[in-house]
Length: 618
Image (cartoon, rainbow, N blue to C red; front, side, top):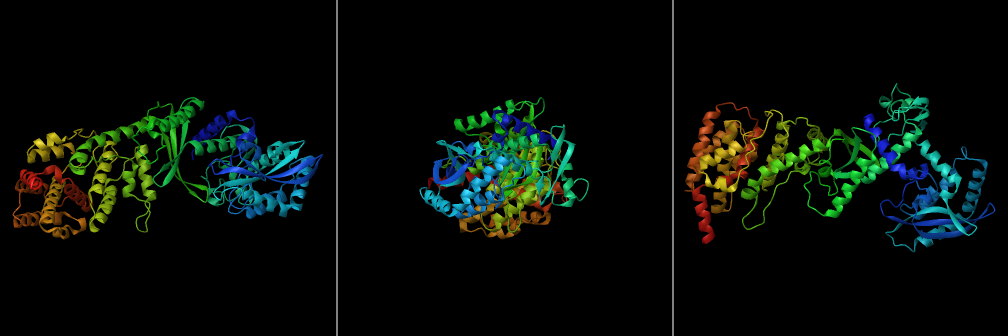
């Protein structure tokens, strides 16, 4: 993670803490942040002039979470204070979290008075542990099995209930634990003395190694440690002072709670960074109000992700006074595993992505109307989002995962880096062939593949295609249907000229149109499509494609339904002009062929229309 993004997280944390009464407010976690821990089991002691006694267990609704001083730890490790969430069963939590904290509490950094108070509490609790466990189970039985709760300590003194936050010993324990985790890890320590903090750029008495909020360094592996193999020197990678560390904690918490979105099997964090100035209140207020307005409006939105709460479509409308980092991750056992970091995305770049989306969706109106929508059914509309890309780079395909390649292309689209066209087409064809061999419709995958190529071409991100504006021609049904076949074909090629820049592509596409017309006739006549076997599972090459034309013509003549002699002449003309040894790859040729198969409805001839009308009136 580049240092300026870390600085942004720190500034966000500083803003998030601006309403906190003290440092503890920023450190304490809400055990009910997910809405599943709504009750507290309070192990209640009574304090009479410093002598403690056990009074019982109280079941209370969890209201002001700060008084419990909860700060969780992963796994079986004790939490920062005796307050702990009940895991699978109450007895395990009581023994391994609650009692163990009291048993192993560090007295080295607390006063004698605090140490004495803690020891007296511990003695009473351990003397009554069996009774306490029994009372905890009894109180827990009053809740539904689906309701969760925490265990904590309360002290009755002078008729008032006091909680952990009322005692200096627990407040100091929480602060110490929070500090310790910044430099204690992997069985060792790493902190620098009288050193420069990499975040605030100030000289500090102490700086720590492990304060960066998400795991970008692997400090238990020698190659990741600055200066060599000594883990104690890990702080030199990104030294962070205590104040900045707490800001980073608060920033991390704010971002994870407010700017965390789903993305096709992953999640990503949106981290805004000011380009000018350093007051984060404005941008955080803008983002916060965006989320609220979107939830309340209920409007249908033109998104490029699968998260209904995503705000990229409104971030794009802002001015370029801030940039955005997108941090893609997966959680493994509650730990964040960073998969991709996209940095410096300005609102104007997001605007470009959405404008390209709108343009290509406009171009595909003709296919929605003439190919996908049945006259008797409602219209189907193709929309571009990153799910179109994910369709061809799924998480699992057989025993292979395409996550890495998917994220690499996502990164390229956001930052404006060219994508290998041949790679895309090979993956598109892999999915289409899978449909074909399983005798499933290839239509949606073929058209989505064409949509993806159009989108990337609109962004000038396809390698091997000349950079420049697309034709901009939007085909209209009324216009297309009014044209004779030869002009209709030329109009289609002109509207898609970036993809039909050779006679080989034109011939192959039109032969796909012709092949589908034969298959349709076979289905009408025999309820079968025997010519399928001639298409070699859509693994076509130049020789196969040239051989197919006379075979299709012969079959049409056999059925007495060769209405397509004009189309055949146009195909033959492009074959002649294409010459020998085509430059197109076999995957490209196969894609153009199957694209023609799926767009055949655009190129109907008069006899087909006449036959359809006769069928409908029969």
